[in-house]
Image 1 (cartoon, rainbow, N blue to C red):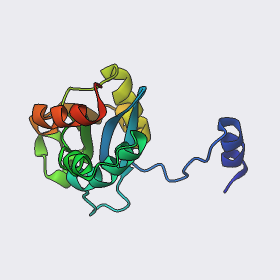
Image 2 (cartoon, rainbow, N blue to C red; image 1 turned 120 degrees about the horizontal axis):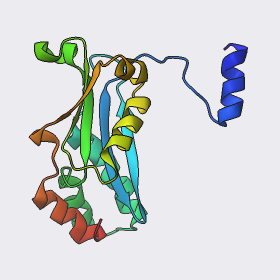
Image 3 (tube, rainbow, N blue to C red; image 1 turned 30 degrees about the vertical axis):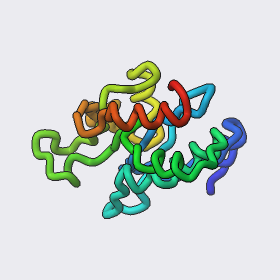
Length: 164
């Protein structure tokens, strides 16, 4: 590691990655009272593709622990309600074969951000190392129905943890 990286990490008070290549992955906003918390997962290789359902199985355990939920029936209901909080995905259009967006990265979302959308999109762009591409106009935020919260799932989640 070079001296610049070491000094920058000391200034920032945290480790930074020397690998700043764009990354694909998924994200959720979790209501962990009293605030929204952004949870992200970046894929470790180009062929990886974790579904929201799979990730939610782990995330729901975190939510249950936060709210001290021990009732097994409630935990099982929570595990099935994977569409109950805002979520999205970031992918290379080329890897998806989306010729209309060729050469771009797509931030798919359901337009249901719990916090100001523009700032949150910028945060996600930074987390997935897409800042340089965004400055070059090669990142698009695209609203898709597939990423919208499902009202039934949202109702299940709020019946267990309370209002978000």
